[in-house]
Image (tube, rainbow over all chains, first blue to last red; front, side):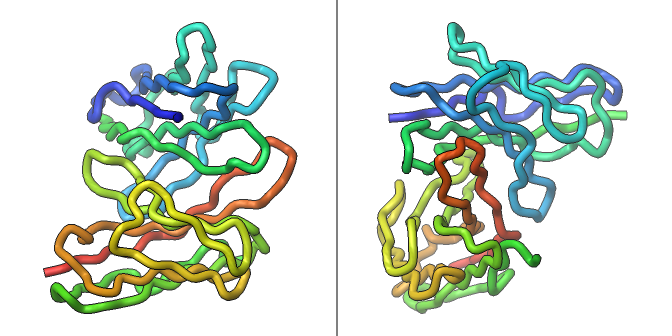
Length: 115
Length: 115
């Protein structure tokens, strides 16, 4: 069974500071990994994804994440936070076996940006 | 393209009442999903469908029923609402493909309160 752990339900950073949101996964097969962002009162939208190939993945709005198999991690980073980054972020894992397209989500990290 | 739409956006029910949530997608996606989102618990899969006429249970199916009579629609029913079903419900869809590039597209959510 797959699982995702997001460390820190709330993270607060200053505008312009580094954003680091942590995600560790558990999967018995090579995983597909995703980060989704949810702005207030909206649905989720895909930020970035790792399937195969390059382990450093770039997404929208300047975010990136690195797949580290040895650490079973997929942490999300952004060099310089912007006020518009305030949102809730979800890490998710999927089994890469063909036909299994269910996602398992983490519990989410709420990111607050302070001026 | 409207993407994934959900009806209604808000609803208040009394315990024991029934209702149906409608999800529609115009992307010709094969897979559709219903999630519920509760504070501190992330998104949990209720039911999903891999094609017209087929449905399957997810992580938290009790108290819910679903139907997929048309490819573009996925209905979630509550036969006898309970306060524990107070939540935000999200519908999502994705495309069936051998390419590991699929992603789930989410609707805007339905906020349901059961009193």
